Image (cartoon, rainbow, N blue to C red; front, side, top):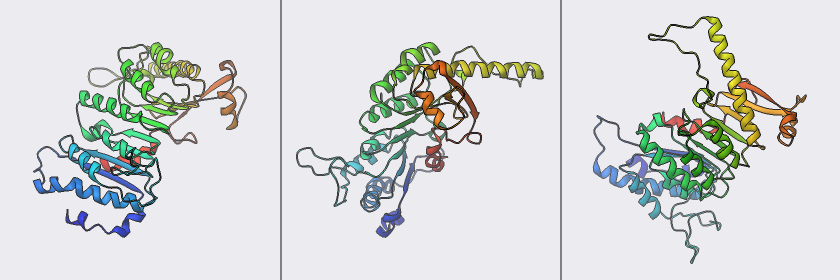
Amino acid sequence: MAKLKDWNPEYSLYVREVSILFKRSPGIMPPPKDFVKELPDTLASILSRISSSSTRLSKMAFNTDQHTVHSFKKAFARAQHQHRDQRPGTGTTDETTGTLLSLSFPTVICLTVGPYNEFIVQHCPNIRHISDVPHSVWGGNIGHAREHIMNLIEEARKIENLESFVIREALTEELMNALYSSIPRIKTLAILRHSILYMSFEDFVSTHLSRFRHLRILSIPDVSHLDVGYSPPQWGGFSPRPDADEIRKRIDEGKQARERVARAIFEACPLLKELWFEDRIRASVKAKGGTGVGDVEKAVNSNTRTRELAFSKGRNDCDCEPPTFMFLSMCADFS
């Protein structure tokens, strides 16, 4: 705590990224009560100095446990943003007086949000990219994860210029309806849980995905989790390893299933440029007979019959990044 209180204000000018992780690990002695009590206000005060001084701060990751998050929420609401040149619309303001009511981070554009921490979204009015925290990081149960995702989606509704949204949750009608209700104009969407539940793949595409008319980049689970009739070859335990011919056959079936899925999605989403399966395999469209990068734009604007699919694996085989790659460095401190 002493080091936090002795923060040198001159350092604030150079801060580009802030990552906050505060959670209690089982079996470890809890910190002193005075520390827990003072930390939220101390941290809010330091972050206020950083936000007031640094125009370079662009990334933030915030993850505190459910037992302390209310203290941070109250502290951030109390903390006064000290930027003298605050422009209208760049913070939380009183509509009557125009004065700033709480701590604001107007330069943050990339935000990673831990469970129960959705309040931080309202303090970052200009964010363009939001991601949740991987489930393996915080170790909560599935029910809590779903509640967190729904709360985060509701907060995303308030962000005017949101471009990309990354979450880890099963594909359900409830999820897709919530996403469309809050962020219908989203351009990049990644849903990174491992299954489609309580609806068919056909309904997922025709009823739900087709409504996102501005979608350019999409990442979804691989085809074996989409209820399209394909299961990858598996062995181990009591299951003997299939012979090479059987493995090749199943791999080919996977490629064919992936192509069917890609064609259905590209047809339903006319502006879509890239479709990622588990952030590993990328499908894109190009005009038939085309070879250059410009052919992607031609394909997007062309009839589906004049387009053809191209597949590549991972980041090494193509000239672009999976939609979640921008958040990897932000999550690194939570691993």
